[in-house]
Image 1 (cartoon, rainbow, N blue to C red):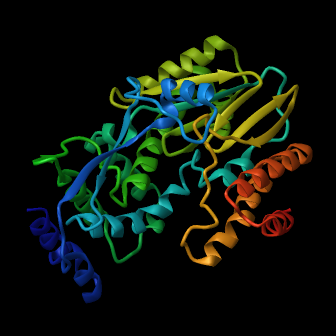
Image 2 (cartoon, rainbow, N blue to C red):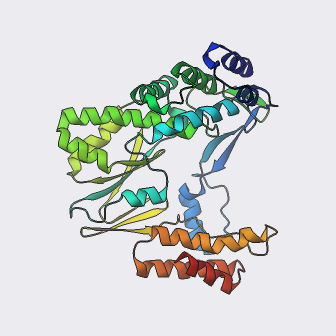
Image 3 (cartoon, one colour):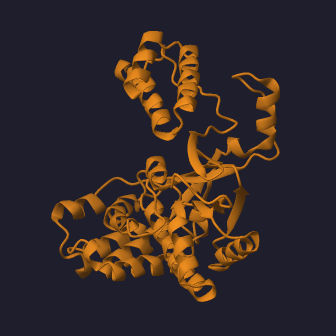
Length: 365
């Protein structure tokens, strides 16, 4: 049924500018049903964290942890909608740059962090609860339409808005998958695993943030709204803000966030000294901001063993790339040297030649 809809879209009047190769890519391939599975969120289980602390070993035993949750994944690399989803992702990605809060990765985030803040500034992180599966389709399509209308020059001129929106509807409304011996159709949200999902989620939250900015302008004035907008950073469902106002206003801001849409809800954490965001630990010392690398409690640093049968060039590149990550993230030179020494011990434990590790670290520095 999904493939029939895709063929009607691809061969219909909305896609008259598609090349024959593009049409062939979208509809002529062997597709199969997606499979549903869950990835354990080991780092969020307190029972596993306590087991790691108590056992202090690279191999930890924790029988049937009651607080272990799973991240739902719909794995469908050959699903009928995956190639259409890929095309839509390519077409919509440029609009992400127009989302004021958008950050690409750790480095982009660090580059946008100021080196100094006010003494009273609080460090705040927020997380959207199950973002992908909670986005109402009507909201997502409205958001995508908003960005296409606001920045029409970013849309490839061979594709019109109707083609994009109709294609998105097909992807969102035909996400079927199997689990055990049963078959399901997702009726809300988008699947974690479809190509366009991250871009779609970024634009949806960006649309809500645009509406939030207008509301804060009305309630608290343009100066506060502009300050909040410039300090608000987001990578998909992970949000960070430097908060320069009192706790009551922060509580009001948190309520406003959760009132934007009943399906999109946030959790919040605050601290005056340090807080993790992505792979970065943000450290506040009086008015200075520094960054350190952040490892989850469940990270046992089990990097690829040097004796594995992976290609040699893969293993020789690992020390440099891990060291380069540390040099990129850690801002204080003394702390950076400590982290690099720690990395050396981790890699020696995995039987990497000491000279290879030293060379990788020197190259990274």
